[in-house]
Image: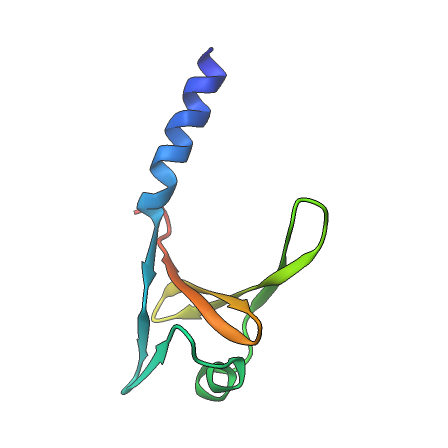
Length: 93
């Protein structure tokens, strides 16, 4: 029972550590949901980390690209060559 409580608490706290955005400002430019991967790479370069997103059976859905911008971890979810989601991940603040 104690393990179940800890897992539940962790699941409830997780959304507090990541914030989703429709846009993300880099200097004077904006990156938006729906922008192409080529626009993202042209603006901020290659990510420091890439990971595939798969179905439960191992089918490819998309990719998770992570950057370190303005001393924050920023993650872009890529599907079909376009940005689907932008998340800023806090370092346990």
